[in-house]
Image: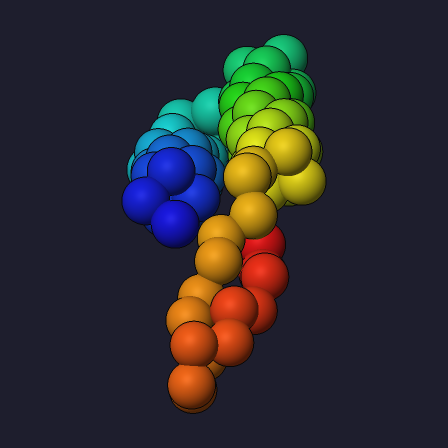
Length: 80
């Protein structure tokens, strides 16, 4: 959850920095294109890192050792 929040905050900061830069960049079409492409590339990079993180988490849960729980009168229930 903490890592996901970090990626969300990073994405928000890219958007905010883009908003601040928009007026100056809009004076030159090349600068505006660079700003837009840079924002998209940054967002795509963070999205890919987040997706890789989610895949790693799923793989860890899949390969985790099962946990045994004592339920009621000494009965054991197995879960993951």
